[in-house]
Image (cartoon, rainbow, N blue to C red; front, side, top):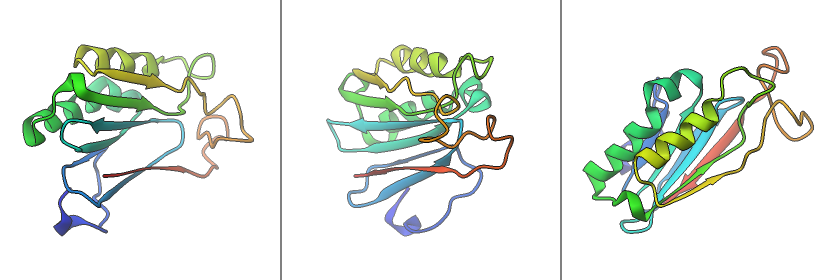
Length: 144
């Protein structure tokens, strides 16, 4: 994301990255996992919406590789945080575990998994699956 694109909705994407200072990235999630990425070496940031399908397609890996290629990030100097998402036993596919595996495979230096499940605490989290599609969304945000 460049300053030229700032303030615009970028449709049909599951991940955003920028090396621009002063820009905020935002994604909407309910049961899918928000993944915050920060490169301490360059200050570049990334924010990914990774559910079952996106995880299978490697959207987190693509974001990390893009940050390496475009901004010169060293994976070992990156921090990743996996936020609340639906997890077993509320969902059969343990995609959060796969996200963590992908982060490790890409050599991310510090990985934090909140281990929070959106379907297990309806007082704190929206869950598309638990609320049968009639639910709100969480906004994940990261600013560089």
